[in-house]
Length: 512
Image 1: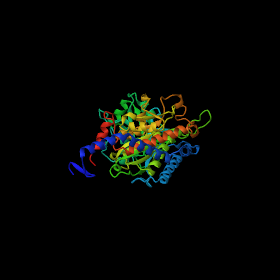
Image 2: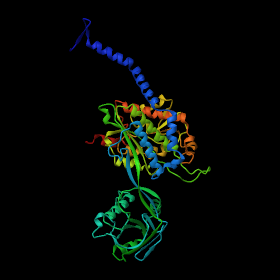
Image 3: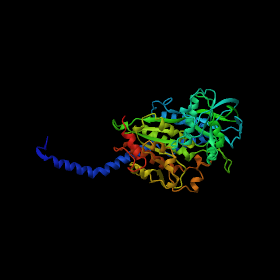
């Protein structure tokens, strides 16, 4: 009917009914919201309690896990524990993951030689003074070498198989738009593809940054294994005077090189990001994913403290974050939100955010389907009335996080230590750079004070040192935040003007 309806044989104006409905909705809307929020709180309480939290953390941060260093058997054991938890909750595997839940991240352990000697033509180079190795392995051999200017692709004019490439550092371009590390890595890749036995880069000794590069490269490292499946090749830098470099440019050299290396390490290994997913309940919104993430590695075994404890358990950093994500996974598996959920536990955060960097460059699901990344990472806490959210006010979901914290007696605050640059120091930043809104939910702190530093990367960061009454509130606030964001009818976004807002415009508006 166009303008009226019949009701008890009386005609009632449609406009009056519409106004009455609007009035009733406005009248009861706060009550409806409150009932809805209470319902969500009830769902959180159904799956989460202090004893469950304590049990998870006790295992992940136990002495038996030996600090969960990247590449250790204990970190693999932690990964298996997370996967078994996912399976018990009913969390679904992710297409493309090994055995459904493991994303392989290929890495290498690198350590410089203990001793080395290199005779280049007639020059005997002093190891660690005029010579250092980026990549090496134990050997004692002689090779022919060939000088190839900067060692760029276009410099290869002849067969170099089995030879050592000699070239200048850099790429010869005035703007030096790439970092010296990227350029050097690319040269090694080209030399490897061409079948060379190694590459030696000549550094002009007039450049005062020699020691800076030497200290950076000539150390123990864990790197991505970009040469996966290939035998390692020698990669060294040597320092020479300009007059010596000119002799090579003029082809005035004896092209024999003798290399002796002992005590070097170049070992490939596989570590894992752990992933799982839960499909959303809404037919349309389930195409949008919220990522719930944390890193599960720590720094392993190190220098003993005053109590002769050398195991860096990493309870705060980041067993707490790991269990935060497990808590969300259990809850959302039992009570799915409208949006789908992707749970990711990262390896190698302590080695330079490596697991999250690998994932964002090799995503198992399209990044433009990921509308939010709710990361959890911690250094410690000094105020048990707070939850500190790094980036709280940088996304439109901030009000929902505040509401969730308040529901469990916590106040939510934004980054109180902006000078530390914390937003760009955790795994969330790799998602932010792609355009995905990505704050980090952290234990309550107001400054990097003595209380924080007492536990941050210290052996004393053990499960028994935690306040589990506070942690129960903290975990429940995270899970309720997840429920509110996952069920919101409005897609969370960066606040316009944020430095990562332009990246989101590109990510979410590009064609499928």
